[in-house]
Image (cartoon, rainbow, N blue to C red; front, top):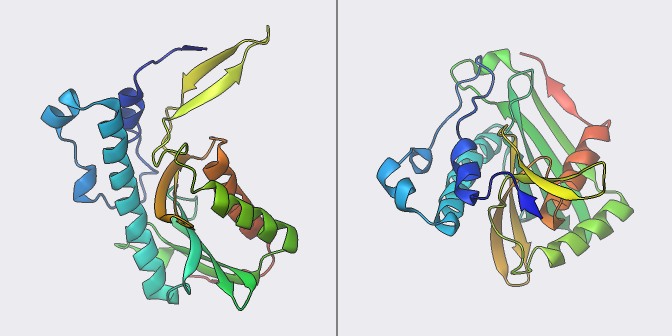
Length: 222
């Protein structure tokens, strides 16, 4: 399989180069600040680890914001933060917890820009996960423990050519989804592009998908 961009480092660098909509002042942790000398000498693995730390720190800002507004989720098995800023100016934070043997989804939207928090509606969803989705999440938690799954996945998309061959294309937009998963071997952090398709990405997609179709959202308009 031939790659158009063979260096994983390139995707780690470009992921921070595309800004969210101008109306939102996106918080940028110190771990995300460019270090030109270090980056120039970094290996692909080091660059991926550095980008994971940056993404996790970015996600923590929004998770803390959600906890302040709505209260903390109870011992989540998996937490997901979609770092994309929605047209309303909100970022979405999700958590799935085991409450007395039932899987509960707690999803919250928070302002991306706290300089103008009153202009963004805040929404909360607290609902029981459907049985089929709960079973898939349980399986996803087991798969997330695999050492074959990297914390930071290189931003490449496999494209099938008309002749059936495959090629890898760098994903240039920075729609990142960060998740924290409780596995049998301990807690793990992951960062994925929204269009990636490995087991971690599928777990993220499942949780976000259930929230998207739920009618139980409670929103407070600004």
